[in-house]
Length: 150
Image 1 (cartoon, rainbow, N blue to C red):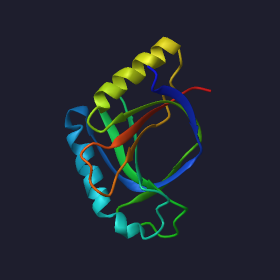
Image 2 (cartoon, one colour; image 1 turned 120 degrees about the vertical axis):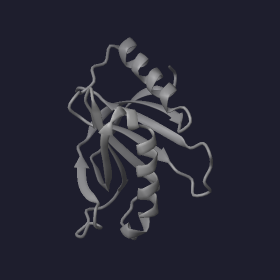
Image 3 (tube, rainbow, N blue to C red; image 1 turned 180 degrees about the vertical axis):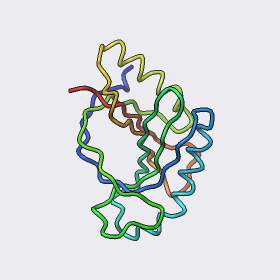
């Protein structure tokens, strides 16, 4: 599990759109949501702080809420249909993988968390960070982050 580690992320100020539905609709709905959001990126003008697509998510045994967001400075006016929110600073268990191997990445990360006897913070959001290349590479780097108890 050499590509698993613990990282601390500062508070993230995000703007984006969300989808909520049963797990059976994923990953198709997540991909559709990200595609829709990327088409609307221009509505943020120059407010976006990076090219990283943030996908915070939270779920229970039946369904999940999944977001497609960009990190921004605080916006006075949020584009229609978008929401602005802040995720507080957290420590995360992290694994690097690619968009083609997200399932394997999660398996590896959950195994590592169990082996290290680290406790997840159940009420905090997990994150998927997509490092999207404007040249539309088929395989993109992704970081999967699961929040940890302090």
